[in-house]
Length: 211
Image (cartoon, rainbow, N blue to C red; front, side, top):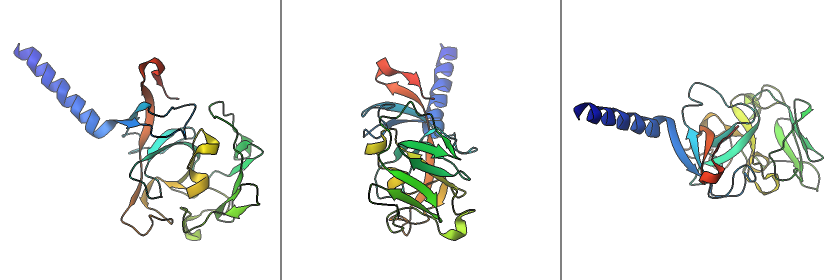
């Protein structure tokens, strides 16, 4: 009996460690990641993923957004530091190549381009840069090139492209540090990637690994 009890105690401690420091659950509050993720889905998030590594193209990430929100956001990483990015004619181009995106709900109904140390968006009224007051756009000193994603910054989008509050609205997500600009820049708010979603846990009939 004591051997069984010791095993249960060890298993419980391991589970507690994993839940506290490595894995957490995440509830999907919106439809911004449809059709990949549905509202009220529950995911498992690897909180250890970015402690010693960096986000990669296509990762579904949980992070603190550079806008006032009590919750973390979940989006897909589209462009990483050093990438060029353009959205044109319903296609997303990274480093000049159109992405194959079978996971999106609809093609984006806006055009976008990273250029001149800013993110320019055309919603049908011509290209305009995002407001540095409301969007997280780093100062020129943090850019390595005027048309490439700066180091430490990431461009993220929801799979439901036309109903997603993402980087085309509020600028770059940040790996860590204080937000470069935007509504949270002057507050005691730390930018960070919480982790990478790796398993759709609930509902059970949709249980699967997230690629």
